[in-house]
Image (tube, rainbow, N blue to C red; front, top):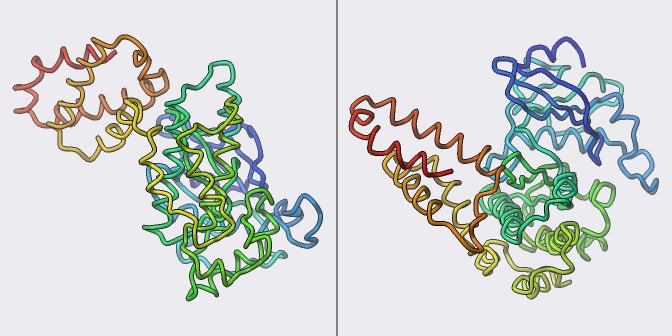
Length: 373
């Protein structure tokens, strides 16, 4: 990978796979403390030689250009349900300002070195679902995964004004806590009548790298004006409707949950202007369970004042000590180990940073922490 990769504060380990667009996936660790990470490596000499379209219909369209687009985009979008990027490196330009890199094409004769993206530890959505096949995921866990997808896309549409454009199972990863994270920004662009120049990359690569199943009718027919005049959410809404069915079938369910079915039908309408925005979908009853409520509280906990954090742990401890019946498994092992325990540690450290608060509260609250598990 070149000597310049040693500039990263992360060690790149064994390759564990390759994604659909030619990025090699490696295990890795942080050099300072051996914490695990996942490392995506785009080897430019390989990408420039490998067709992006496995069907062979688009000759001369190689993996290099969409890989570069993803590399440039993935570090710009930050959200709890988007795969967290820890570090990036272009080994050809290790000292370059990544945000200032050209958004244009790359000269294939100069395609040397690697693009390296270090993220939180994760596995692909397909791998995660396969791993869970022997330990059937609950309806609440599946609903939480879908809620993560919708939240990430809503942020992308409303806060970043971007359409993802490549929604498919391969564009989602799952971290160790069981949170589904959006990824693969190879087609991500702003959409609108005044964004025709920015949409050029999308028009060039849409039919090449997006699976046909997930392309809405106006995309298949290349009705670019219809796309530009619709909301930024419209294409992704259709793709997500297809994905929801695949997601539940891959998890061993016969069909989409009944409360979701009408919403999915609306998402799949051929009329691009009639496709719904995604946030109202979260009002569906499948997202209103105690499990979803707990997950949402945890997501918001890091920005709460310390008193509210301690109150959350006290209430959770009391709830767990009396938990019986169908909700007794509300906290699974991965949530406990990779989400709750780090937050407990963070809360304790915050309290201990204030000596007066520590003296007042240490003994009163010790019992609350011990009752959580």
